[in-house]
Image (cartoon, rainbow, N blue to C red; front, side, top):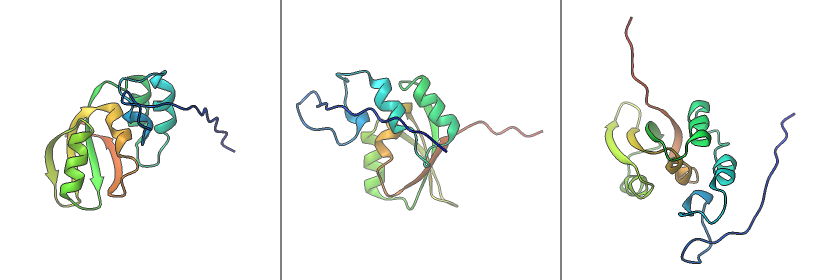
Amino acid sequence: MKCITLIAFHATGADGAQPRHFATLRPPPYDARIAIMASTDSPKLSPDLQQIIRADPAATVHLLLRVAAFTEQAEETLVAAGFQIQRRLTLVPIFAVSGPAAGVTDLLDQPWLISAELDRPVHIH
């Protein structure tokens, strides 16, 4: 059985607006690690990516984001979350992007995002 502890608190953004998602609060008026840890427990994120987000949310990562389809809305959302689109892989719709590890938490509510994982080097033996 899995036990989950939820810590709830009320916070507003720098402009006084209610946040849409924990990761949208910048600069955070609270300990950002609590919000990041709560938001990384998603089946859309690979375990190794979850670990990096928890350990160093500001780290620059290279990701493969599997999407339902390539859309202008998806591209705009990726750029707004701090990512640079490196390429589009078309056999299966995947964006290869780079940007802040914590930025992926801004994408978790997007219905077009299927999964996110680290883009690792391929080694041929």
